[in-house]
Image (tube, rainbow, N blue to C red; front, top):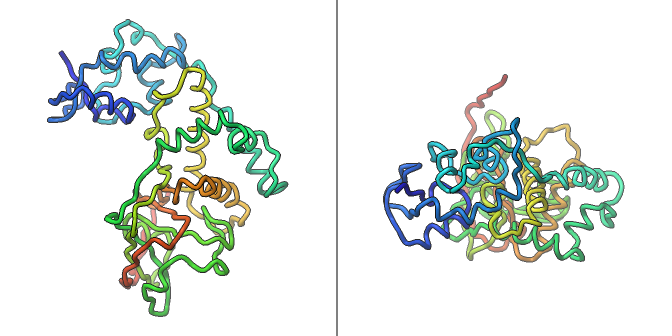
Length: 340
C-alpha cells in the first residue's frame, strides 16, 4: 500500500491531517524518509472541493495540473502529481480533462480601479466597490474570508531571527544611526507613506546591501537587528502555497481564490524593482494595503520577496522593539550586470 507524506503538500490543513494519523515511514511519492505518512485514500474527503471548482472539458488540462495552478497543493518533491491524485481519488475522474468552473478574477478590475482612484481621485474617502466589499468592516462576510486567509499567512518572527539593515554613508555611522528615519525625514517607500516611518530589513546581508542600490566605491554600513519580543507578520512571499482552501465552504471558493489573486498581485507590486522615473503616486496602492494591514491591530508588518535574488524583505510598522548592533562597514568593489 503506497503512502504519501507531509512533504508532498504545501497545504497546512493536509499536513495536520497526515500528522494526526501518527504514522511514520518512507513516502512513496517524494521518497522522504522517517516522516509523517498516511494512505493517500484517507485524503479523499479533503479533496471533495475539486468537484466544485472543476468541470469536464475535453480541451482542458489534467486535473492535477489545474488544481496545482489554482491551489499550489503539491510540493515540487512529488515525482508524479497525477499518480498521487489518482491514488487519493477512488473514481476514474483523474483520467478526464478539466477546466476551471468558477471565476477567480472578481477583484482584478476593482483593484485596478481602486489604484486609479487612490492616485488620481480620492485618497481618504474612497467610493470604490472593492473598498466597500473587501476592506470596509461593514461587510463582515467578505472581511471574514480575508481575515481567515491572513491568519493562514501569519509568520512569527522571534528574537533569535537575524535581520539586517544597510545604509550608504560617507560619514561613520553607529547603531544609533541605523534605525528607521524620524517621521520628518521619512520619504515614500514601497510600504510607507511619506512622513510615516517603517523599518525595512532583509533576511541576509547580500539582500540588504542590494536593496540600498549602492554604487561602485560606496561605503556601506550593515547592522544586525534582533527583536526583543516575538512579533507577527503577514508573509506575502507565496500566498497561494501558504493558504489552505480546506476550511472554506463551496460557496466561498470563488471569493477566496479572488482574494488570493489580489494578494499575489500586491506581493508582485511590492517586489518590482524600484525605477527612478516612477513618481510617489506609484507607491500609493501598496502603501494603502500596508496601512490597512496595520489598522487591523493584529499584525506588526509584512514579508515579501526581494527583487534581488532569493532574499526576503521584512517591513515592520514600529521600530521600538529592536536590539540594533553596531554596524559593520563595507566598501563596494564591483557591480555585476545581467541582461537579455
